[in-house]
Image 1 (cartoon, helix red, strand yellow):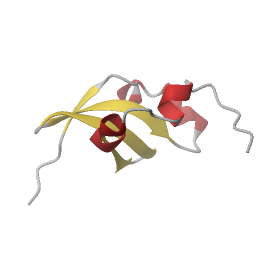
Image 2: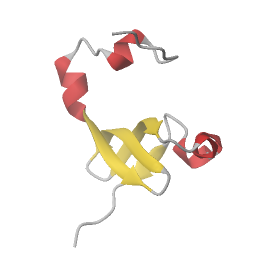
Image 3: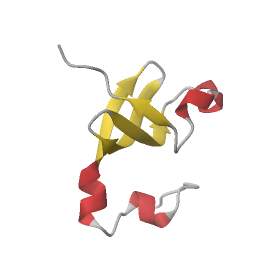
Image 4: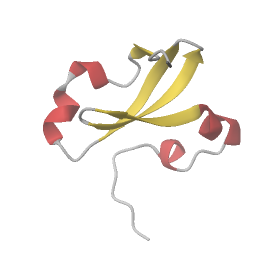
Length: 73
């Protein structure tokens, strides 16, 4: 398999199983976000998965951005 990507090797093939388990995929209006939980109410964006190239220009999907968890009802 040949993988053409600009992502670092450790993001694609995480060596720490705990790091992999702490990440979660959540849907957003532009595609999907890979996030890791910071605390029970907040997540940090790790990466955006989208087929829309313009979605990557949206600052609210910048890796490292903290987002609030939506309340469950």
